[in-house]
Length: 290
Figure (cartoon, rainbow, N blue to C red):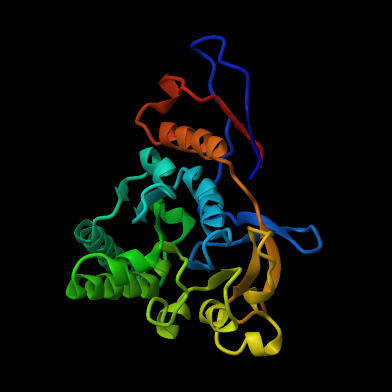
């Protein structure tokens, strides 16, 4: 999603120009090996990203967040054990959780309560999923490094609680507009068991150290059929295999946002979420091209 800065505002009536996006619109991720743009629908779906450090998964995660942050019908819930991968978006988020497993669990329990309330709404109206016409905000829960919360921080019961809550939200949330985008640099069976992986409709495997790690992200048996992220060059960050449920992996190159791009996008996203946002001009004057 290319972005450039416009000239400074010349007066109090000047309003920054930005795209009118919706969570129901496809999300641009990058290009395929033929140079064609790759966009994926996230509504009613979840996305898992994995790969070794430096493979580009966090960059792709930020690219997806660049879209959803500019959607006026989307709220952000960010969990980042390192703080710095998603931290630039914290002013645009309703919730930002750093290296705090207890708070992460409380946040997922809040999402679980919202999810149950929305299902009660659908049951009352004899429906099976929300639609754009309902006017509900889509809640995007982005998690950078699942392993920190599920296998590293805190005590074992708290880590197991996190894993159970995450599995429930990934399994049941998408029909009511609660979407999970998660990334990990430790694609192993204890971090991403097949029962959890298969709940993610979209899966992206950046470079991995072996075929087993690639299969843990994409699905069992793909490496044996010639689809493995282990063959991606180490000097090609952002390249990886993308697969949709029921599909075949294909090579893509994820779009790249610099820190300056993210700061500008996040500043604008925070501004459009403020009450009475048309009354003032934010510090960053952003023009974003779709």
